[in-house]
Length: 216
Image 1: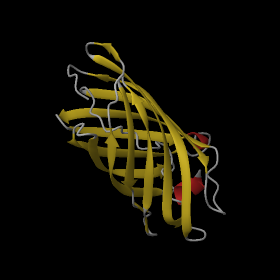
Image 2: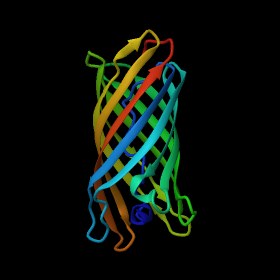
Image 3: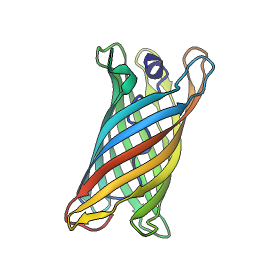
Image 4: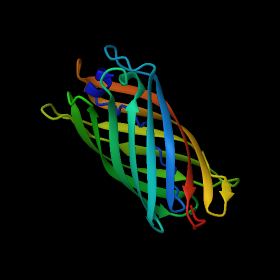
């Protein structure tokens, strides 16, 4: 897990975790993710899993704020390692013919004992469309430069997509389920060889959206 942090790979809450829609008012969800693939000769990211929680609050017709946090499961027996991030999400186009949304925020990665702490910013865009039956396929890209104090800046590129499902449970509640696959490329992020790291992972998200509005 230390190698994950050292290599600037986001250690816990993984994936886009944003399907381009707006919550009714407030949305809460749990996240589970895994890195089944890895990519450098020296660093192995195989079988790394993370869990996290996420909340979204709508603050306008087309704007929401999201707060996320998570922990790397493999680190829990020794020195818990995780990430926290906050981002603003804005919807630019509404189903014309697709929904175009943008996102941007800040993030921090660290260990409980304070041996390592890194900071990053991220920004990107998501294209999606409601196809009926409350299903929304989506795809997006995110740029995430991460700074390791005392070292240098490590740029990361994330790309991926998935599908979400938001069935109505009652007049003020919608369920929420999403599954996605995402890839990461860290440019020069293998600190042992100064080479790129490429990895990919799967994310599952389960929660609910609450409020009086019906728009997504």
